Length: 187
Image (tube, rainbow, N blue to C red):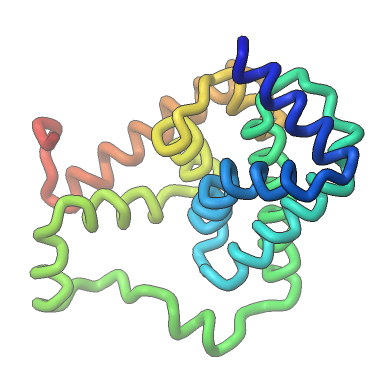
């Protein structure tokens, strides 16, 4: 309960224009927001730009923060909306050559086969192969340690939908890991 009160007072100080409070907000949440956006977008430069936009929006709208959820939940919800908007814009603009070159070739050559020996690499690739909805659920629950209700709040969906997507995301991730040669006994 102390942390919730601390977060509420931090946002009040940000809303009052206190520069030190903005710095504290950035120090606490910037890396978390950046990693979340990067997992959704996949392009570090764009993720960094969106992260900056998230904190600018949070600073401008700190007075509107209702305090019904944690500050992290509020910031990640803003981040998700910004990332989705960016993805839509990218789809409308089409692919450019740089983005096309950054796409991984799904076929394995000997070098890629050797790289897949690293279990973390395999897991990351399998997670990246999930749909954006499933990847987002996995990211929020396992990497950001959010509860089902917090995930629902961030994504703007009911808890039941979060649970259903989580079930399908785990099932698909299990299939992808099996296809990559990783069995269920993998730590």
